[in-house]
Image 1 (cartoon, one colour):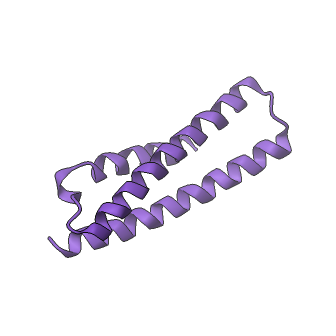
Image 2 (cartoon, rainbow, N blue to C red):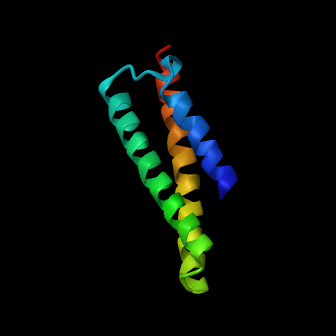
Length: 91
């Protein structure tokens, strides 16, 4: 989970760089959605890590939360790849 979080942080920085600036309204919308997705991902990551450290959540619930979080990571990766392809198409 930490590795995935680090990957998301690096991708977030890349999206904020000038090389990934949106070129049309579709790209602006995708970028907005990605940034929102990063915020949600980070909040979920922090919540899960807090629960792990506190050991207060049931293992079944925690396992489900982690699985959903990993699925969200995979989805964010796909969305980022699609955005980068679209944004670089106009370069």
